[in-house]
Length: 241
Ligand SMILES: C[S@@+](CC[C@H](N)C(=O)[O-])C[C@H]1O[C@@H](n2cnc3c(N)ncnc32)[C@H](O)[C@@H]1O
Image (cartoon, rainbow, N blue to C red; front, side, top):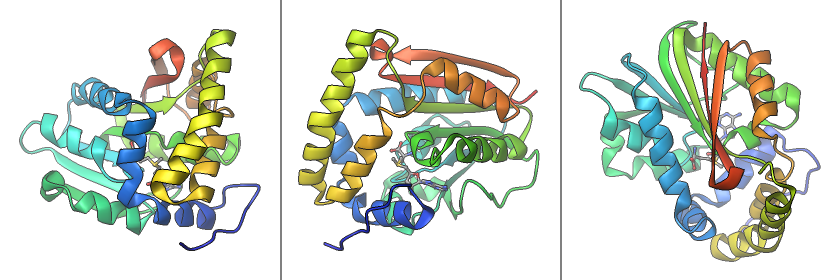
């Protein structure tokens, strides 16, 4: 197993290296660590997203493509589904899926998308905002780019871990992440650096209300969210005015 340099900040190269180490085991590790809830949450986010209408849908930071696959099952005929990621290794895993035949894979960084302004009806993103959040500025930059490519009235649906409002639940959640995500993830995937990094991104991500502010800062008008499982995760919906 290749050794990765320890970096205080998640640079693009660092992230690409992390995601080159985990594709084969990525889904199994998620299902084990969340007791299968990640699948339930992705399906729920996909159902919320699929009512958006329009025929140009994009799953950003698609990774191994689970969300894109759920979208493809829900999409009306004639919908074009594209899936974007900057990790060739993660997208190679996604391409192995049966439904991949209905999905166009695009290699790109979310900060510089190869789409025209106002060309997309729906954008989904799951469990990736934490990676874009090298710092708040970088997250706002990425979300502003999503806002740019959406059509007026287009929607962005984001599924991400969050911060439970109850201090007790939050402390238990962070303890679980500290004790299990790094250890179990490292053991099952063989990537110690990868799961050490991924486990650090969870406690430092934003409460749902702060992510609303960040989405407004990125240009979105109407933003709503619903908490999942006492607030350990949240689905945000944002509309371009
Ligand atoms: C934790 S995985 C999430 C994958 C998938 N969306 C899911 O629900 O499991 C994060 C993904 O975001 C991708 N990614 C991170 N930063 C990115 C960026 N700036 N541009 C494009 N893809 C990025 C990574 O390559 C990785 O596949």
